[in-house]
Image (cartoon, rainbow, N blue to C red; front, top):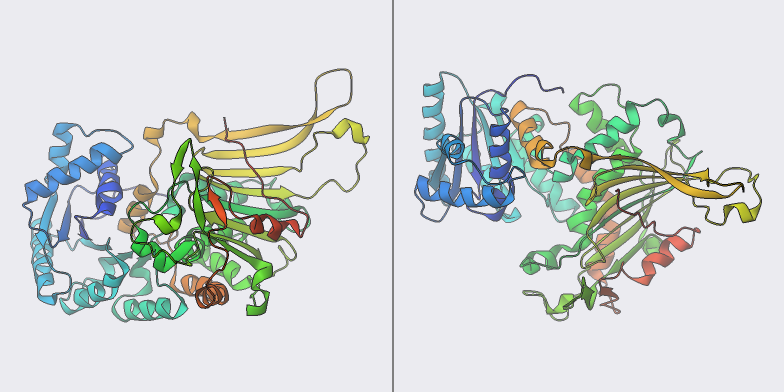
Amino acid sequence: MPKKTKPEPTVFIVFGGTGDLNARKITPALFNLYLDGWLPDEFAIIGTGRTEFTDEQFRKNLLGGVDQFSRKGKADKKIWQEFSSHIFYQVADVNNAKAYDKFADRIEQHKKDWEKDPCVVHYLAVAPRFFSVIAENVAKSKLADYLPTTRIVVEKPFGRDLESAKELNALLQSIFDESQIYRIDHYLGKETVQNILAFRFANAMFEPIWNRNYIDNVQISVSEQLGMEGRGSYYDTAGALRDMVQNHLFQLLCLVAMEPPVSYEADEVRNRRVDVVNALRRIRPEEIGEYAVRGQYGAGWIEGEKVESYHHEEDVPKDSSQNTYAALKLFVENWRWNGVPFYLRTGKRMNEKKSVITIQFKPVPHQSFPAQTAANWQPNRLIIEIYPCVGIRLEFQAKRPGPEMLLSPVDMQFNYDEFDAADTPEAYETLLLDIMEGDSTLFMRADQVEAAWRVLMPIVDAWDDTPATDFPNYESGSWGPAEADALIAKAGHSWASAPGID
């Protein structure tokens, strides 16, 4: 919903307050909201962890994260002092239910000081194994009793398979109402991702051709140059399919493929996203080779530097068969998209870090021009770049200047870089403000999470049960295994290589 006023007074409890996520994302986002005048006048941020810190030590540590990671640069000393006076630290063992009584006392004190029931946000910036115990202890300590104004925020991964996701959903829903549960995926907070809805449904010219009659295929690519960066022990239990496809890539697919919502109400938009996942063609175990490709990176070169294979990463078993690359061919079986392939790919240690959606249109039904006039002909494409360039590009054919009829591709583009980056909110800023305001539009609902796992489980099970015999099967610095090219070449397609938006 459009934002017109500041949120109500808020107590923000960050479980895992001494962790990397809080330092890099959460506190810088809250500070930027404060700078832009979006935080309420009355707010408190309570970080918690097992390490002993004073409030001042905790604030000093967080300042280092703000100075390093905030889009606005280093914090002004006076403004930081004003903001940080709202930050407190509470040492606590999340496994100990009695430790949560201290949070209840703090909330009660703020309630008295502010003379109003505050919105209470429980942010679980912790490893997934702690999600259940924190939720249960929040309930035992009656911290969920402020039902109308209480929220719980759960980071990905939300489960590691369908069964564990259902168990976690059941637990959370036994304590909280679904409207209070915010399953956060930062991709949905990115400006370009949100702009997909505006682009599609605020412009009369695109929606009439947004269907199987005009679109040949859709490609969603999220590639990363980095390897494990100290996450080897976690990643080897997840892999690319669980870590990226089930959440980030499926969210992008839903925004591209969803039907027009009747309104921008949260559940109406989320209903349309769930419809897409429910319409995905189910893949039978014997068909997995036709629809999915996995890979694992070997040694190679990235930007002139030699990098080691996945097997040489810290905390990764030398014989690991975990996928660091996944490519899928999916079909949305409804009237709009019947027969249109959606190609998804993601991987570690690839040629470059890039997130891009490419909608490729069908060729003209009749080519009027002689073959020699269109030597450089390319399909019409709509390219939505999410990272590193941020913008939307439309590629189409036009005549070259000169006396001859020669066709060449040209671009029409909208470039977010024309805006001051310091004025464009980070994804976490958008999402944290939505949480405080009780707007769940950009968050996953339980049924969408479970539907996504349901689609992927045949692949997850097959890959878990059958170790790969050809790993590593792509070099670091490449675009992935050759089998991924073959996957879409069978239908006469090739992976689009989208140039950066200038």
